Length: 403
Image 1: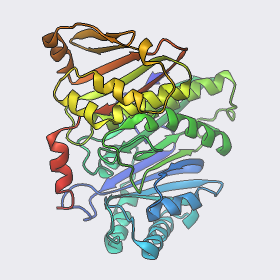
Image 2 (image 1 turned 45 degrees about the vertical axis):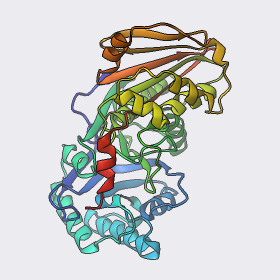
Image 3 (image 1 turned 180 degrees about the vertical axis):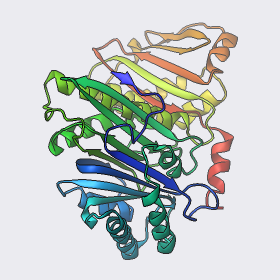
Image 4 (image 1 turned 180 degrees about the horizontal axis):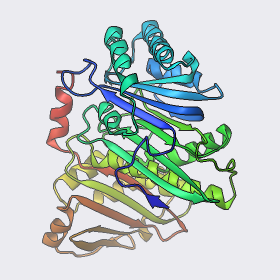
């Protein structure tokens, strides 16, 4: 696998994108467009929140179609809790883009992110779309910038693999900084690939990969009304249709998982107000499910997050979070340690505390990226989850979000 430096949603063949400022936000880019030159099969994953935004409902229905070609995204307004008008506006956005692109309405997905409970300003949406179409290019960076809300940097990734003499590429972009919790997609994310793959197999792959990547991230315990992951696969790499269980499929899956995994980690690194990136590794658990539940419980704990903010080796909070997770494990067998670029320190062995140097622990936990490792000593299964610390700035950011 080759990692494409500075790659993104337009790295695969046949994809163009653009980002512009349409006036939904005061100064920053706020609308993006992704277009495939060829018909693309699609896959999607959406929020499990019962309060689903209008674009989510539109996309869930649109996904039933065989092929699609475009995705229109706006930031600054979530078009959520906007009743029938919201659905009308989502459909009108798709129709307007389709008309300018020479497509049908049902070939266009829409996505929104921003403030909940405010109707879209359709004059600005249409103005934005009319600006986006002539700006389409092979540089997708402006599109990644345009979908940001409280994000501090655009999130992009891409990788390619050689399959029977053909270069197959996967690229993507995501946004997400707050309302990030392991409950489906946790973000807006748009993945493109020039691989030839069936719609059914692509949907299956997306489901399992989301479960191992986006579902393993927690910033603040909130799940958005707008969470959406969409994938377009246009087959322009020219490979034979990939079949699960083959060596060719394994190569494609490696690139696909790399892109989604990288984007998921970016979400945790860019958590609202965060100063530290936290990785929780659970090793040798009884089942894969138990390992994932344990890891997610730790990175979701507000007390654990607060301890990391203070560089405090308060390991009891980690065992506590594991204990109430609902997973099956024996606390008396657990080893626990912390590691970072500043070193490694073990604080628990066989469920019992070990004496350790508090100053050394603080030095290790003061790094920007920290890993906590819990070895359950009961099975062969492992899992990783990602999060960030909980800081004063998180409250500041969300205390005046609308203003």
